[in-house]
Image 1: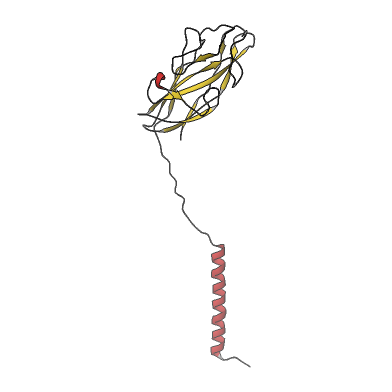
Image 2 (image 1 turned 30 degrees about the vertical axis):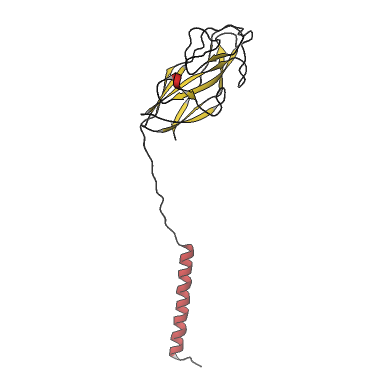
Length: 195
């Protein structure tokens, strides 16, 4: 028996609706979804780290009765030679930029002859003004601890002053005890980058 035309049209419409709904569902499940990602960057003034002075402990006795300490503040040196020099860096950049500075805990100083060594434990102070005597210890560990310090430039500048102790072992400064004679030297790497 043949179905009436109206029933056939209704069935065809129902089937077409189901097919379209199924295609729309599949399109939603497998379709591409777009969204945006914002991208930005802040360009600051060129960052510079300038070495203004090297560390010099002066002439030391091979046997020293106490620690050899070079104060980053420029005073209260202990058992150093007469001619000393505190290390100094100038950090320059954006007017009020925040900068991360890193340095090693200690380095090995090598003798120019004989393969002898001497440990140097660093202490780093900082100041927004160019005044060593007003500087304060940077980093969390103080003497002989590798550290990172966040500093804020003042009018585009900040000053680092470097001292510390020689003798003993890494992290444990001690008196010089029959230290082999010679001229000792080494290099401490400092790094600065914007936060």
